[in-house]
Length: 392
Image (cartoon, rainbow, N blue to C red; front, side, top):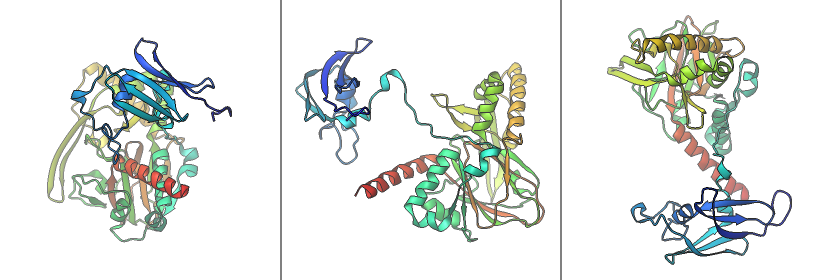
């Protein structure tokens, strides 16, 4: 049945689209339908010789593919399958539901963006917490945590204990940690020998981690082991998506400047006997092909003094970044809280600007990174497994 309660009676016709290109049109008898190019249908034939039954991947060799294939005969079978006999006598059968899940949205490109922006006012409502034991033992809770990270970009896991391997254990529930020049895991504590300014007790301004990496880590895990009991050491966070939204509202030209003018990000130094010199060139705001923000690069410490642009753009860029900074630190945007020993703070490094107030005394965090590719993969697997479990 369709959304209006009518019974669908499917039909298929061979026709040409608006640009005259050959297509097969499906009509449901209730005013709805979808169109599929001949080449796409032939390229996605689901028969065993064209598609692997185990993986669903194509077995066709693109070099030998007949891009001009045309249907010699087509029909709807049992009102739920499309049968096509092609002009080379090859036969294809497509489940109609499978086709509908892959319709081309009649000229409107489709993309997924489930992220929800937040400000200081809404932070307490979106800053969700999970119990460590639940995430470790329950796939349902694990999925809830990963989906929360994808939507809001931040959450905290409580009651993790003080064992130093908790970040590794948590990461193993997803996949594995991303190793960087700072190791698989790293200690955030006072270390006067280190070149990383995070290893100081002074104020740590808002930033994203490792903007000098082309493949910068997607999610940061920070396990609080020791925290000063007195004031100091509080975490500061701003939602970079909200910052960018506000900037675009106030001055679209400044937003365009920060999303187009390239910046050199650099890290040069040593850690635990390993020396490094990283350089990556990218704007502060990185957009995907749909105009969604896919990554924010922001670190005053790691922005190189060498600027690979003309002097006119330097003036414009500084005007734009001043506005960006003022928004990021605005009391209506920035949120402050204090991690407690046993907490693991988890957040999207491509989105959330984070920092820390200065402190006196001892403070120790154990950190690690996860890649978004691995998180998204694990999320899809969990969604499929739990859906199948619930349907059985």
